[in-house]
Image (cartoon, rainbow, N blue to C red; front, side):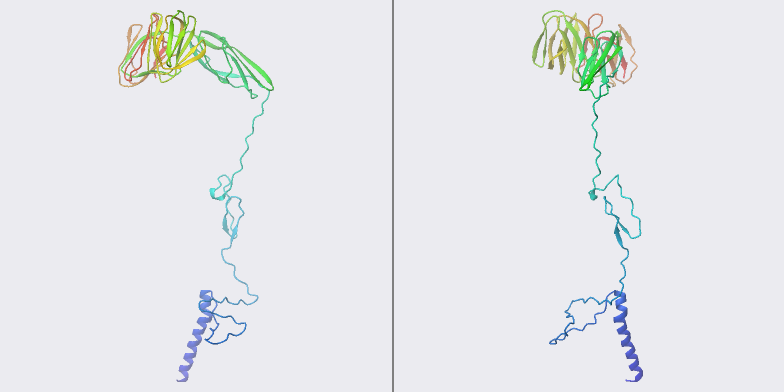
Length: 369
């Protein structure tokens, strides 16, 4: 081999060694394995590591060498709600204190409700409505301060109530004084309002209405009267009850009132509804369907019954005081207030059927809804 070829070979070997020892570690980040495997039957040098196939021998780091810090460095911002990880030198976002995440396990502090402390009570109240035609249902509302625990109402017509917010119906015309006494463990106070409620005479329009539409009595409406002749009775909820002379009776329609009423000749002969509440002399007596009733004679009848006639395409015919009235309500519903007997003592109602109704009697008013 010529000298020139020998030099070229040595240079090539040098390049290979440099690539293996210097360049490859730089590219891969791994130190070269300079250890020699033990030959079969040879004895390892004392203190030298013994390598086996697959072993990776960690490189020896010279003393004083500073290792580079991995980038980016991650730090915890210490939030009590969520664990936020941000690069070093970066400001962490504020944790959403108003809407903690479910994963954080953070529970917002609960504000403990404070219990009002009772004080010396001072009575006050309001009422709606404060005037109107008889019968006049009035909703009273207690607005007293001091946290009272006892209420005594006087409505000015001889009736009282111990409810906090009573509903009372005035059944006679007049001006009424209302008082409320409130009490608790610290004392009591009474408020009196003179002429607080005014009940006027109900208007009276005598009408006959026939329509090819359904109708019903508004729940909660009633008639009330005094029995003035012996032999009166009612069968309600399967129970027959005698109503002696002098009994004050209230019959409340307590459902979506589909039924019939017949009053004529000074007697009540029909009051058929599926759910009626009977009060006798102001006291609850029975509840249920009314199938039979005969009031031989009555006096002082008042009515809060209201009749809703459905809207629709069915014809509506109205007579008022015997004269035809042109119904201009189109397909709108019709609303009758305080239906009751007319001046001849006649009231006939049939609102049982789904697509027809008939009424003859007196009303305070009738309007298109």
